[in-house]
Length: 170
Length: 295
View (cartoon, rainbow over the protein chains, first blue to last red):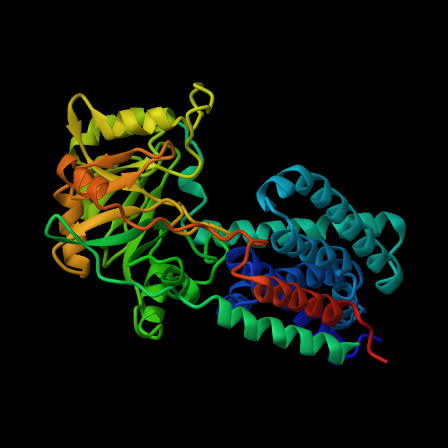
């Protein structure tokens, strides 16, 4: 069972790592201001993930509790946490972080996204109890909802549509 | 293990605070003007940046900037928050000016000195008029060749042009999308008329805020004086090739008495062994906090 405490811990872990990433990439240290102020800025990540999980549970397993599934989903963030802390390590230990990241980032991002996808699929299979086909559908729905949420923000903020070439624009 | 992680983390935070203090800054006067270090192109986490608007002013002070314009894509909310947060930075807080990067597929324009947002429009002339009505100035953002068709017709109405940008370099491909520094220079000085030379970091992530900057020759350290200086072309920029570009008399003044250069600490180097050790311990503390299991 994902306890409330476990869920909160997992969420706090993610925000701690995001704060660490912002602080270290911008100042190369754990400067407290960057660390603390990035928490509200990146809290949307949790909200977007919750929306994705809620959509999957409501659509495919309405008998399950959304927060319970969400707590167990959060527990599978290990690959992302490791990758982001790896980026921090590059900024601390490498003499030329940009060069290291340019050469390794695509590979690391691919592996991390794949690994994260596998864990999310496993969460839908084992925790939500979906069949293989429905778990694949759930995975698709999950990423669709998350992507839509982010794009919707940029549309509402007026930042997306103006950069798309429109038909008949002068 | 968690206790060890927590102790190391706190050690990292305390040393992070101690070693990230802002440098002492002196008032610099050249050619009879107060010289202000400015970055007029900065994004935040409310769009595609990394830093919260709450941290912009403090970070800018740490980077030795006197002026920072927060220029989010098609909006001024983060600029308003950053300006408000600057009040709490204390002594030596940089001047935060509200701005916007008016972003469309045809061109990007930096508006500085706004009180209201400017709606993104594919007609740059409308955008320029709206900014000027508010008393602000308009700067061509990274005017690479593909933006010229939209920007050239209104070039004489612009106040400045980015002539130095971190992405622009001489070896970029000459194709339409290439970020060639020659194209930025050619737009800045086109058919014998110069705009105010602007160097901006186009800051999104990392340590690079102010890595490319503009020296503004202002009558005083106020928003109005900075905007007036841009309008009058009283700016100087150091390009990627190391050349000073801008109003000739002011360039000469900076060649006689150069401004202190600001390096970018992208890690590793640190400011001594203690800094390097404590930042590594702080990182290790986070790793332990994140990955150690509760008993």
